[in-house]
Image (cartoon, rainbow, N blue to C red; front, side, top):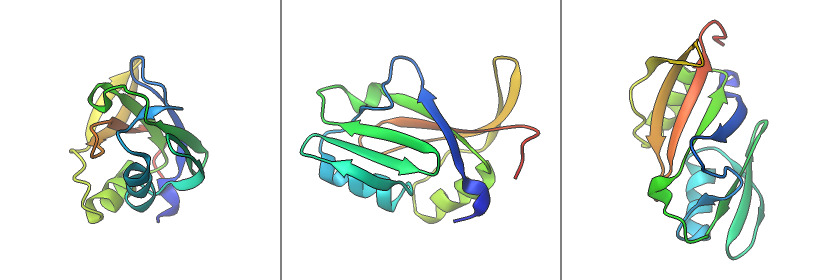
Length: 129
């Protein structure tokens, strides 16, 4: 992994709880998040898991919520390097685009995990790796 693909922060979009991202089954979800998205497993039981990548910790939960209705953002050090990493793994990330949040410019791309949780990967302009 490129040094610039450092995960700095994560947060919810809407009312999604990043400590309990909804999944249908823990085992396959943990496999996807570790093997494809690059997270490390911190803890797991039958219905929940804690994962980490760099400074970011997230949780997964079989909680009856619809994964298609969940979304969150990740701030990363190098959107281009992360896009390439995910493209190589067959994730099919969306195009990198410029967007503005709270009056600040960002480079972003979106991707979905197999259960439907939508991710927005962001890098503030002017903070290129």
